[in-house]
Image 1: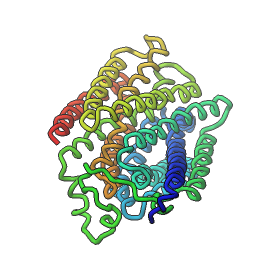
Image 2: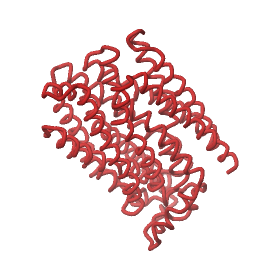
Image 3: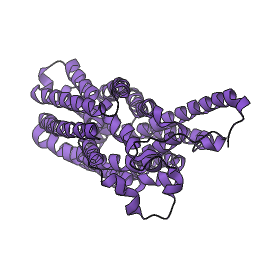
Image 4: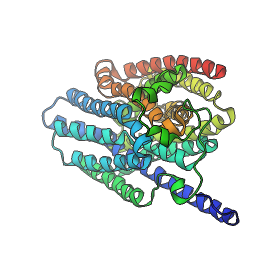
Length: 440
């Protein structure tokens, strides 16, 4: 439906207002997702202590909880691979709401649980339903904003998970400091997610066309071209034909490999930072939970800096930022491996954790965001994001059980040295991506 020419300024103002509301709903909703992820990390020292008090050896408790975490990440990865593309068929709004509702329900189920089997099943359900959320967010964004603003819009929305994580951890640390148990942390997270579920249910719309505005312009660099993605996505084509443009692109494959490596490092710090800060540095459980917020907080600064630089360097410059960030991240992780935490100032340890976040998280945000929309466009953006993030979280599975076993057998120095190797290999992949993007 076309607006009359006389009402064009009013229509433009109405569109900007609704776009602002859409950004706020998506930002707040996805930040709430991370309250339902940070709760396990913040509660991990308390859960280890409780399981040890029940007679389980402490080292075994760490490994068992790490295994439960890995099971959830595996469900998240498979969900992104199998379910992420549903946003291209039934709409991004539905996927986004499914993630918020599932996070709320399964977080409450975790709080009601009394042992590792229930914890594991609830965590799997939580991560599985959340797996469709980011692809849904990207799909809605592609229907509300022209491709010329995707770098800024997705960069802003990518802040949501860092802000959510950074807000959740100090809040939960404060609850612990005031005597709250781990169940209170999970109920608090569920309340936040439930509130944003209700807000998005009543206020979020699938696209600006629903309100009479013109469809958003799609990227001409899409592997699918710039046609109307929704009619094509709901045609009778076989799935193999739909996914062929993505799966046959070498550059897309490199982005998936980069996601695999970066997610291992990111998920390791997301889940284990409170345990590392308590066991190796000597902070209390409350302080460790609060200080672990340095990772997402500094990551938010990194995201703003690399988003600004990425818009100015363009699609060929982003792989260069990935290369530089990953190389610097490898060097910082090597420093954490060489410097023993108990022999240096605790503030230096926290600063090095923040430096890892700065080098990693900004460039990492390109992979499942701007790159996903660049490869998939309006037609396959959700599928592109689902595959990139799904492959990444297959690597993230190693951050739970695998890192727990390395920490128990080789110590945290062994963990950081292993992660440094992952970053170095990922930097080589970023160099190859830069070469291919120049050729493209």
